[in-house]
Length: 102
View 1 (tube, rainbow, N blue to C red):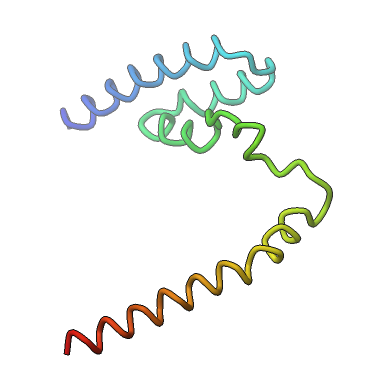
View 2 (view 1 turned 135 degrees about the vertical axis):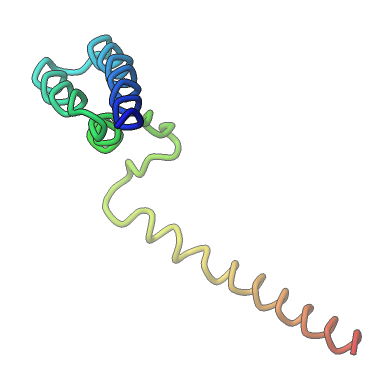
């Protein structure tokens, strides 16, 4: 019984830390209230917080796909033959090395 109490108290401390993090963020009030309701659930609340709150920063502008529709696929299709030639050369070179080693 003491083990569950220790886990519940630890969960409460973690929940308080997460609540301060939520309320200091720049999110909307409705989001803060919803995440707070999830976070205060004993023991599983902090775990659910990880699924509810998305704290990942956005990708750099150059890594985002902001071009017209199909731009990424078009770029890949134009470079694919070059990469395929390099892969074929590597495979052929590995085959020659394996024959020389045996």
